[in-house]
Image 1 (cartoon, rainbow, N blue to C red):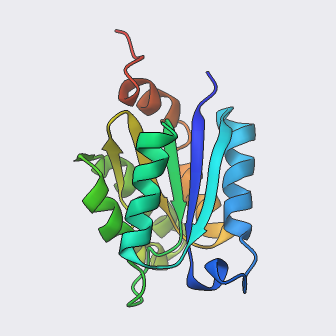
Image 2 (image 1 turned 90 degrees about the horizontal axis):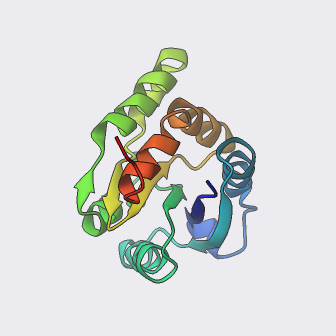
Length: 161
């Protein structure tokens, strides 16, 4: 199965072209190599709730991605608003996946408990918030990678008992 995947980076500096988006590159590599997915859309937006919301809606409703992976905006800083924006877009949360990411990372580094990302469903799309660093992306995505195919089958209506 080739999963249609979109990547959304929330970063003020990235949106202004002041920072290279290395976290999105890690996502791209993991999606293509580990998940067997294809990237159908990629964009960088500033840490503004309305822009994050608009991008998520377009990626799910217009591009009809099976999976949207966000990076950035998931820590404690005042401008970190990705989880709040995601909550306004999703219809249902998948708390176990977010909890698994926090648990796995916090086992190695207690600062992992500061990650506020969520996982949820909009229509037939799974949306996963990831941290804004390449290491954080890799560690968090690795924590759920083995369950992503089954989750995607269920969300997209392809799972059969």
